[in-house]
Length: 105
Image: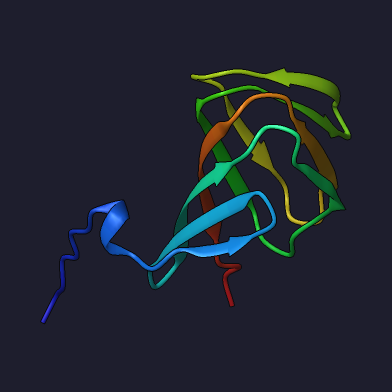
């Protein structure tokens, strides 16, 4: 039987680390995350083994990546290839939606 899931972000458990709160909604081929980040938080340089999309809902961050420095603002969407490095400094309280695609195979 095919399944449809409907959630409200606030109904999902929050994982809080430092100035970051994450709520994750896993699927079969991708996962979706709602991330709230406090101003002054830094995400050190890292990468992922999967393709990733990030949607900036509110706030502002300074992203560093292979494309150079980017001033992230609401309405922007970023896509990272698997293995693409990135880091960020959050200059305002920021809300992101992150889509992580599971590699095929």
